[in-house]
Image (cartoon, rainbow, N blue to C red; front, side):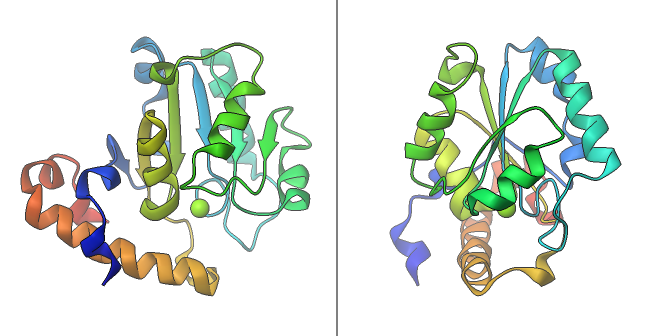
Length: 186
Ligand SMILES: [Mg+2]
């Protein structure tokens, strides 16, 4: 299986939470983080939804009020991203090709300010795209549970298989970190 060829440490997030709403953004801001690059599908909304729920809308407002610049970074296509960001007044980048870092670099360079890697948080629900990409780029990676895994496409389901093996590998090789992050709860 492919996970034997991959380095475990590239897939370890800095934090793991059940949901985007469980992340302590106030504390992260106090620690010096300023830019939030977040995945869309199954991180903020499910594949079945197109626009932000009231709760997401309020959360993004709250993040802006804390002082974060919020940007959507998605591997999905532009029309879906455009539709989502329309009422939120934030930028959104589609076809990010995570885990490649090209999309991350493009999103960062399109920001209102120049952010250092040490000021950037990347949030997502997939180890093989979001977390790997964040770690390759060198920013703070936060993993959340997928909102609704059932509606995922075939390639995401395949990624989930590899992800499951990788989480088992983290459990074997990095048991302390595995426990610390509560990855058994995933
Ligand atoms: Mg996702």
